Amino acid sequence: MQSVTYRFSESNRSLDIVALLCFALALYPLLMTVGTGLLLLDAPGTDWIKSYGVAEDVANFWAHLAMAVTMGLLFAFILRWKSPFLNFLTLDDVGLTYVIMGRRRTWPWREIESAAVAIRWPGLQAGKLTIAGQFGWGARIGLLFMNGLASATRVTITLPDFYEPPIEDVVAGINGHRDSALGIKRPPREEAQPSPPMQAVAAGQSITFSMSKAAFRYQRILAFAPLIVIAVALILFRMDGDLWSELWSTSEELAWLYLAIPVLLLFTVFMTYRSLRPESNSLRLDATGITYRRQGRRYAWPWKDVSVFEHRKLAGSNMAGRRQVITFSAPGRDWTWRWVRRLYGLPAAPPTVVIDGLYDTPVEEIAATLNAYRERALGGGDTSA
View 1 (tube, rainbow, N blue to C red):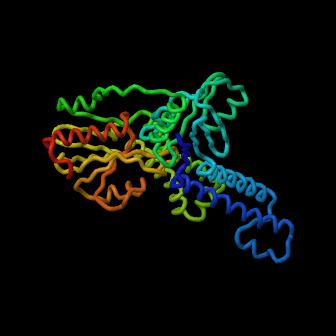
View 2: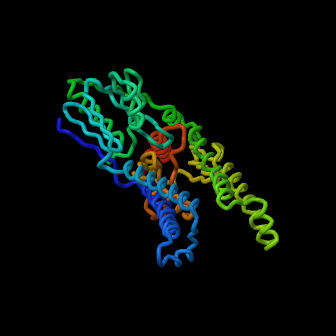
View 3: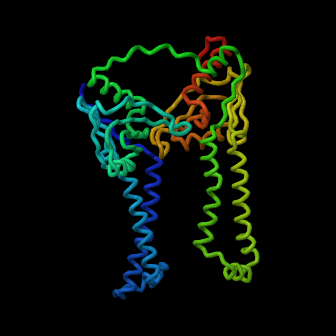
């Protein structure tokens, strides 16, 4: 077989935003470092620098320099992580060459077991590649930086869904090259048994898909993110007793405003936590239609009012790989879904409802179940809204 190279996709909006943020956070302290350095050196014509809030202080110089270097290193790390020239897979008749962030390892096909697609996170997939061999401590530590977990005789590498083709095509290409090189002929696949949701559709029973526990843990992190913002603000602005007394003596209204901000943030955390619970995020199908609960809000449509459900993998929509969602058209006010489509980078044209891939069932199976239930409810004839 001809050699094939799979490279990372250049379109990753999440990493682009993080890289831009790191660049901005590195640029400001770098400018402050240069300004403070010029003032400390008493360079001629530098009095105007003080008008921009630059202090002539050695401590400020080293603090800004440390922040600039840290953000600069993080910026360089992200650029290496998203570069298609430093992250790719090459398959040929000899073996597999795996390159991640410029680190290269090559294994012959006889040491490589069949690759498989695994659920990395609700709505996110990844490839699993197992390699047999002898791995010393140096090789094991090196493989940790290549998304690999190694023992003395075996290593398992996680292939993120960042490549140009979907991870299913990458895994199929790896297995195809391996089978061709080793002369393996796979038996034809047996017909799979209907999944439990499909059996429920055939019986006309109601089905409820619930948010997975892993997704709920991730949502809790998002809910408590404002508390981290409060802690950082308290550190940066040094909101100690002297500052409070100064604010109170200067303006009582301003002091009440500063008191209200933490209270409002805590209330936001509480409401966000309530809206992200598994009970507030579910998908129910029955003979009358679909009931979709998203972040505490309830939406219901009869089957005759919804279009075909489309399973979509969105390239570059998440820092961990392609985010999977389900989209369909339904009547109703579109302003609720407009920002959701922008969040996932979907076309802005309404009406399109988005079902997040946060459930304990694979997204493609949920989409197939929705279409099967819709077709059954409509008599098996109509396939479009």
